[in-house]
Length: 140
Picture: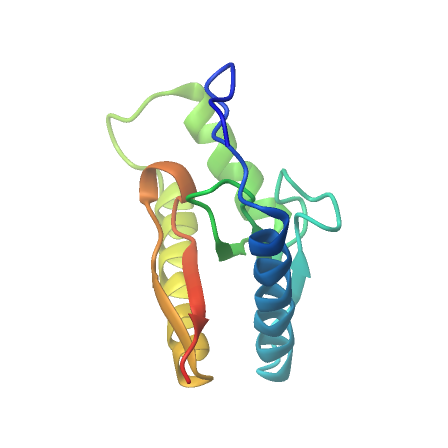
């Protein structure tokens, strides 16, 4: 694959993306079996994380993969966004602290649940994927 313009990373091959989609569907099924609300953000067009619960998505870039992350309910998410938009970080308001705690705890829960189900998981790069869990595959 050649270089892409505008800083967009090159995409993985169609075979790799197809395998990631199969893995993402398995992740969704396992989380649903555990009773968690889950949706495919990349398939359902939820790139802004408007739905609450577990958002599973496939990053099609060469270095991408399958990611699962927790999205809080709208009220808590909106409160955190409003605080961040104001940009005053002299003290961390309770709503922002609570939002971060929920997301952090749920990331740990997702990682534990998926590992228990036989998936190989690791923490994703926080600079590009926040608190998402990277699902590398299924243990044989």
